[in-house]
Every structure is written in C-alpha cells, then in structure tokens.
Image 1 (cartoon, rainbow, N blue to C red):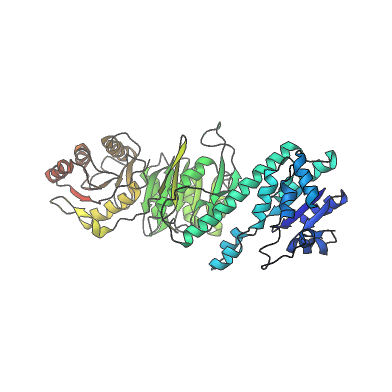
Image 2 (cartoon, rainbow, N blue to C red):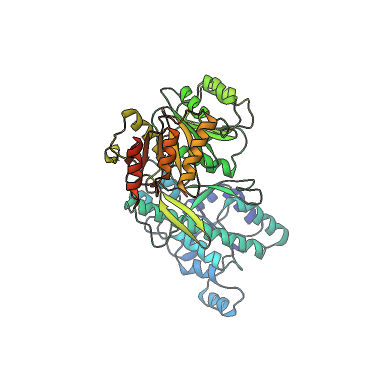
Length: 517
C-alpha cells in the first residue's frame, strides 16, 4: 500500500505519516512536505524519484505526471486497467493526503500583489485530489487534518478504510476544491472591478458555528461568513458575555447594524424581529439611548440594541434595567462591561469597526423554491440636494431634519413601511402591512399609546414607497403631522399633493424607494 502526501497545512502530518509507516505503508512526498518528513526521520520517496522527472518551473510542475495519475485513477476491479499499469510499470497509489496552496491566507494579507495571489493558485493539488476522489472506491483521499484520526483507526482495526468513509471523504474533496476555485474566481472578479451579476453564480462561505436550531426549533441552522475582510459586520464582532448567538439574534442584529450605519452622530438603534422599534440620536450616547428606549418601551423588551459610541457606566446602568438579548457597541468602559457581565445571559458584543459600511457591490440573496434571487445591496444614499418640494409650503429646517431622520429609518422597515420621527427620535414605526394606510395608522396609534396623545403633533412621516392614494395624507393630518417625505412616482401623486396643500402639510419627493421584503 502506498500513500502520497503533499500538504500546505502540515498540522499533525509528521505524526500521521509515522503511523502509516508503522503499518508498512510506503510514503511518497513532494517539496516542503518531503523535507519536513525527512527532518522528522520519516522514510519517504521524493516525487521526482517516482516519476523519473525532476520538479521544474520553481515547483509549478511536480505531480502532473502519468505515473502519478494512472496510479490514482486505475480501477482495481477492471483487469484491463491493471494490465495497463503492469505493462507501463506503474504501481497504484492507495492513499492521498493533500491540502492546497494557501490562496485564502495570501489574499487576506495587506497589500498583496496580484502576482503573489496568482502564484498561490494550486494546480497539481486539486488535480491529484480530483483524480483520487473520482476513484474513491479504491483510493482514500484526505484533505482535512481532522480526518487523520478516523482513517488511522480504521486502517489499524480493519486493515482498510470503509467504502462509506471513502465516499464521505470524496464529498469533502469536491466541496473543498469547489470552495477553493470559487475564492479564486471571486478574487479575480474583484480585481477586474466587475460589478455585473454573473451568468453562473457560485458562492463560498466558511462555517462559524452550528446552531441549536433556526428560526424555529424544528429547523436546522448554522452560521457562515464570507471569506475576506468584512469589517463592520456581525461576523467580525467579538462576544464578551452571554449565551451563544441564535439564528434570530444574528438576523436581527445584522438588520440593526445596517440601520445604525446610516448615522454618524451618537445613535442607538433598538430592533425586534428584523424591524427597528426605537431609534434615537443626540449629542451624547446616553441621551440617544433615552430616546430609543422611550420610543417603544414595550417592544424593546427582549430586543437587540446597537450603539455607535463607547458604552459608559451610566449607559450600562440604564440598559441593565431592561431585558435585552444582544448589545453591540464599538467598545465598553471597563466598569460598564463588568456591570453588563453581571447579567449572564445577555450577549455583549464588541464591534470596533461598527460604522464601516457594507461593500456596495455585496450580494443580497433570497432563497426561493428551486432557485435564488440575487441583487446588490440597497446602498444608495439620499442626496439632500436631489429632494423635490412638491407642495406650496416648504418644510422648515426642523421639519427637514426630522424627515431625513425618518427616511434613514424607514429604509430598514419591512414594506409597506412608515416611520414617524420628531427631534431625532422615532415615535412610531409601522412595518409590514399589506396596504400603506394601515401602516400609517398603525404607527400613529403606537405613538399615541407608547408615548403620548400629542406625540405626533408637528412630527415628520417617511414612507418607503409612494402613496397610491391620499388616504395616508388624511390620516397624517388627523394626527397633526406636518411634513411628509416619500418617493413619489404614483399616477395619483397629484391627489396626495393636493391634500397636503389643503392641510398645509409640507411634502418632498425623494425620487427613490426602499422596498424591503
């Protein structure tokens, strides 16, 4: 029995090779792996000795030889295959241990050159893996050091590796090489600044953790991250306290973080079930918390809170009074963190680059039965100069400030979405209704119930899409709302404009919508 070993990740390889030798298995090796085994006193044959052909082109060509691949691909159950090997004086290779050039590690380095990245594209490794995996019935192929132990145990106890294990290892090979090729393709696409959606889409992610369950206990779930530098995302956060994050924690926190990135001043976002429930901005982070909390003291219970400033002791004292699932901030005063850690179940996360925006070319993916719908993320920002005042009355500076605040929030509210704001505080949020007037009435009712009956007087209203009728304007007027921001573009825009003029409401069109389904 013969094994071919050529690994970039040399974790445990010396110990593994020694065990193989002790079982009488002959080792063939290449380059750096051969040198490491030799230094450790492991008997091995260098690949050039096997092929009768020297490594060349600075190691680019080592294993690309018929003696290697015929030895891997020959089916032992086919007499003609075995006869051809005998006639060609080629011996079989029964075990392959290969992992690939560190392309991922290379491209993650700062200021890596394209030439360096390309030089770390493995050719011989994937070819050997694919040859060995294709002939899985006869060849055991290992790409992951975690599988050394199981293979050794089976070889020692049974003298061979089971067919089921070989089939499992075959699957791992093609998942590994598929991910490897996808990383390369993605790197090249980014190098070309190619922003088009490709004709074929292959994605690769690496598992961060398995989860107890998904949205519901009967659903399996795991957390994966994109490969690369993803600053400002929850995958980059460091957990400082609390239980493991759940599927819903991660989903809700991600939505809250993306809303938080719309603000530069001290801001707190509270989120529940993927929708913001309270947002507050102020000159200091404690006042911002007060606004976010008082915006909806009911829904924040068991919610997610994200903060774009360091958490002070005073802020920690206030948050500790509330049952929260997750807190995320760029930093914590030492005493503030110690205070929050007294609540053992609250998940406290530190995300230093919390304000770094998403890559505008990132994909937004939604699974549908039998397929995937893909779009770039909704990264377009409102340019204040592009706003169009469509009513007789122009908004005051104060109304404009409140409208822009509400517009940032409504971008992250499930459609049909309405957000009310006053004094840099949300006072009512109406998400996910099947018609727009219901969303409008809902957030007006919430403001009256959760804050006070006069909360909506002088407030600004933002709508994520145009008003198809003037009924939402009517509801806004009844609540005392004095300014409305919406995309415009309905065939009945004039009805809403006319109604606003009748009531003295200022209305501006953004010319862009923010559907969120």
